[in-house]
Image (cartoon, rainbow, N blue to C red; front, side, top):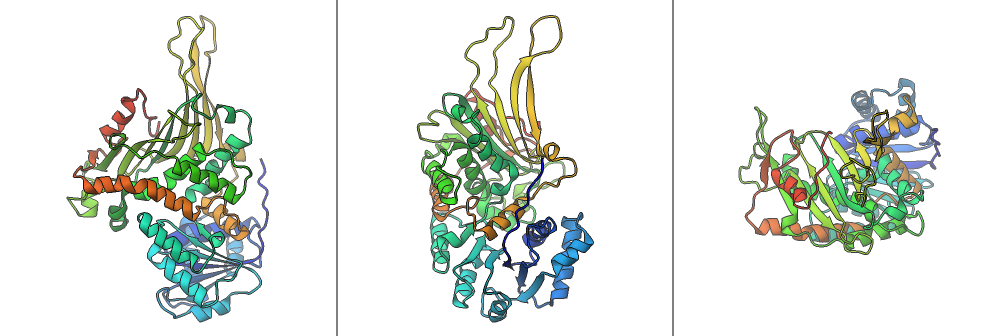
Length: 481
């Protein structure tokens, strides 16, 4: 399998927060890799900004150090040519210092992209200054990271603030999950093959499980996480986006608004979550490791580090099919997957064979991206007719070859920004619809007195999450199994 690289047009990318962790860990290495394979043209330029004063050479040394840590496979000669396209401008994101110099660094005849790798409190102010100083041209794009709001009211205010300086078609709300190869292959699997789409409905599918499990805790993010929790940090954006791609109707064409129109319809069709369909948890201290309450330094915190919920999509296609979502910290394994569980065969013709289980289509997002389909076959060999479950497995690492490097989600998404392709980015009404669905659930917790249930580190979460499935006669797929 050969990957075809299509170069983008020359561009100026202004990277706010260029000395921060995300820029050093993901964005700059991603741009280097696109330069290495020839997708980022020689004429492209990266203008890094930050609060500190430093010259171009000093900043380039910072990038070299980051590359050694986060992209050790870089080639010195290529990195040298890449860094020739990087310059640094000190800019005060909260004031007027540096903006005139930044304006003088940009070319008038190329695409401009402004990547805001900064806290959300700076989004609106930076957008306004870009507009006031004449940097926001009609062909400019602005990229904002999550969290996009803390609730529906703040998301609306942020949308309105950005739209005073940029048109909606210029705003790119990034969710790196949508840039993963397997997530995009989910759309190809559904809409480019005649095999699955006729079966993609309540007649043939029993339920869907979406799992995003992490082994790490909240260390280093305590202040942010205790104000957000798993519902705001993961469910409102990442998991809802995955649910949309599973449940959406076929768009009329593969175009940004056509795809996002169908995703919005899914979110608007979500039933309110019943209190009995939610399980929340906090990881407890274990064998000398601090628990969640120790990490946040607040013994009274009722913020969840784990959540599982049962979701219903109220439309014709999915009537009666539950979607089970779960995500959490300090779980058994680092794993993200979508499992589409088909209904069991209604009848077995084979003697001495018990109940036959339905096929399961598993889309693995991490750590090993790929797709598997469980099937039932005859167990080879003489001595009677026995059945066995086997998987048809496609690992992207194997399919692309041992020497192929998996493309990071940020590489793809930044190039989509330059191309002006918003298909894999969230639209304003999409973000607001997700918050409108999530807000009542969070308000119910804040008005009540229930605390999240403690769970063991290295487990699959609290017992209540297991019961959420057991009472429906179903079981979660094993994490790390």
